[in-house]
Length: 64
Image (cartoon, rainbow, N blue to C red; front, side, top):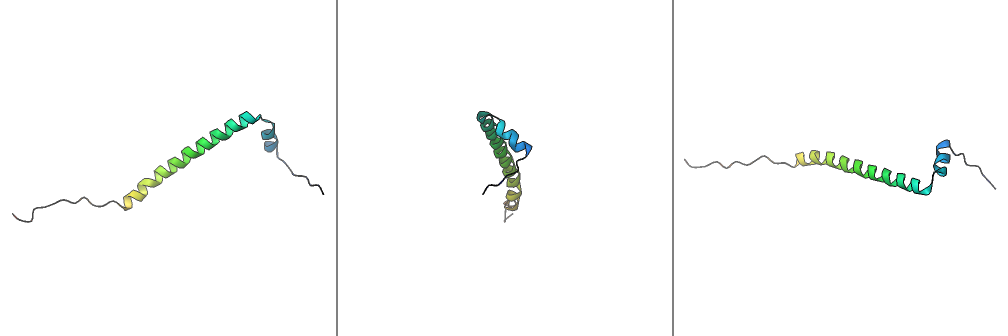
């Protein structure tokens, strides 16, 4: 039994590019994804640290 899979024009174009170019584009995309994930982690960090901050304690003399 055989079946046909419909492939779009983008899939066909990606199959035609050389393997080295495909690997280079894949590594570039991975690097961009890691940078965006790091940026999201940095943006999420200050919101979490604000909930755990305490008021500054100022020592006052108890005798005059």
